[in-house]
Amino acid sequence: MNVLIVGATFGIGYELAKKYAHSCNHLILIGRTEKKLEEIKTEFSNLKAKIITDNIDVTNSSHCTERINNIIKDYPVIDKAIYCSGYYEPHNTFDINIDLFKKTMDVNFMGMINVFSILLPHLKKQNHGHLGIVASLAGFGGLPNSSSYGPSKAAMMNYAESIKIDCDKYNIKVSIINPGFVQSRLTEKNSFDMPFLMSSEKAASIIYNGLKKEQYEITFPLPMKILFKTLRVLPRFVYFWIVKIITKA
Ligand SMILES: NC(=O)c1ccc[n+]([C@@H]2O[C@H](COP(=O)([O-])OP(=O)(O)OC[C@H]3O[C@@H](n4cnc5c(N)ncnc54)[C@H](OP(=O)(O)O)[C@@H]3O)[C@@H](O)[C@H]2O)c1
Image (tube, rainbow, N blue to C red):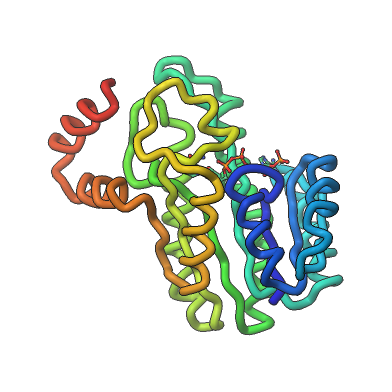
């Protein structure tokens, strides 16, 4: 099995990479931090997978598409691709930094499109494959101080639903992954209480098992999943009332 992980240098992507390094044949890891990619190569050198790394900024579409094309030329069979690159910066509703909104959308959504613009037609041609898309519980509904991050994750969730039926026709599985709070560089920025906060390792374990079962949706932890699923179907005035209480906004 050949696995590609985009956003594998830190956090959830790195922990996922560690898991796949034990089980797959070729593991292609992507991130911007060259030094970390080199360290990972050394760290995983005794494990089963042959590690291939590439330093790609997913927001640079021409560079990104060219490099993904090269990867496919070198490794024509991609069995699983997981998009884990992400960016989040907490901010105030009334303090709209346009560059921050653009960057969030560029990394979380357009970066994925840059990668998939090459990968999806390739998976179609090989007539099999599995795409894992790491979105977030924040994509289920608008939350205070999440007006840049939340919409980017909602876009990813909608995108996964949009491609699912066509992908089925070509034996391409799609999984949308919606974690709650996970310890990483991203959540280090939060100054508020994060209920059910879990380690990146635990999150990666849940994602790995869900992907193994080819589940369409991998949403966790369970109490947050139940809460967000319930909030989604409630009338909006009840939704805002509960979200205001929970987030102390
Ligand atoms: N932590 C949470 O509570 C949480 C909850 C729900 C969802 N998520 C999602 O989980 C995913 C992983 O996040 P994390 O928490 O593990 O954060 P993280 O530790 O900061 O990891 C983010 C990854 O994205 C890569 N990345 C960022 N910008 C990039 C770019 N322009 N081009 C290529 N790669 C880029 C980073 O690598 P380089 O810096 O080396 O490029 C890194 O490998 C994200 O999509 C995040 O939104 C996280």
